[in-house]
Length: 284
Length: 248
Image (cartoon, rainbow over all chains, first blue to last red; front, side):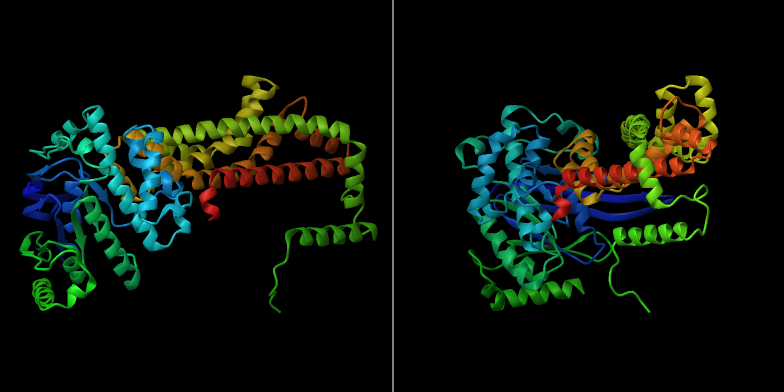
């Protein structure tokens, strides 16, 4: 299976007045096409820093990131713009890429209806529940990938070179040939999710996890998820990377031995319980 | 005893006016010094045409000044944000400029620009510009970093981040600044007129005070209060229209 993301020897050091604080040290990580990968680790272990480097928000001190296509990043908070309705929030990637809104409105309507969120199209985020906001933010991420595909078809992304200049060496950005024309819309997106369910209560969280799985399976998305929650990582992922406390290194890479499609009952199987125990011992 | 129920402002104002009327009628203070509210309302009716001419002049100065203060305040705030080095140099000067009393500058402005509309507009701008510039300038910087990171991940330019995130996020702060400025605007115009003008409520109050027609001074003051409240109300309506998501 082809790789969606290859991270090689990424290091990041934050420089403050007279001090250097290493956040990541020689990180190597890979995400295959259609694979769901989670990164777990304690606070301050550099998980979010890694995700921001992959999303081109930060530049690494050294190392390289190779990505197929341009991933969509969802920050820790849902980051929905409160002054935009749900539909307008979903149009944000189009606005940034200067794609005429009318070309996307129909697709957005279809997407919202497909996932049972059509009734919220003209509502502001403040009127939505926490779970619904997270779902809208996830759909925006899917649309973000689609917007990039649309613009890639029309013209090359002129900003790519800047990323290289900023120090992300070896980045390979380009649409998978034919994917926008031979597959339905929104397919093959690559989502970078930074603790998307952290603000939710336990019940909403379980429901949102299942919703994410259905989204990912239907859209054939590849995902790199940051989470604190071991059970969430096991339930959702094909592979789990464990970050070590404080040092910004990867301690372990564990495949998840559970079949798909998944349900929460799988978490009670001996394999899942053994993995949970193993991951827990690695974290404490 | 603690007041447990909310007292409405109009009711409190009516009670104050009633007490004032009663005190004045009982001869507590001569009407030539403190006229009764009924005398003020009577003067408002009798001199309505004259007062209207002066009011229009003052409101014109205030609105033009406020509009220019908005343009200048928002423009300076955006420029300070886009050019951080300029911000470090200009921001302290902006704060310093507010320590100079505008009333001391007013005679100079009249000497430089004459008795027409322009110097009064400048005075209104000097009063109104600062609250808007500072509120917007601070708000542009205080945007949620998660949202900025999201836009960066979309490869948005700094200009796009400003347009899609920072400016809309600054609207609430802008209206807070504008509310303060609109409260200053009429007062600023009157300060300019007090120093030298042909028309306006400031001139009217000055000439009335010089001829000991205190009731007319109070009549003009009543109009100042009414117009200022009206302006504040208009700002509140504009804020509601421009920030519909806050009603949710």
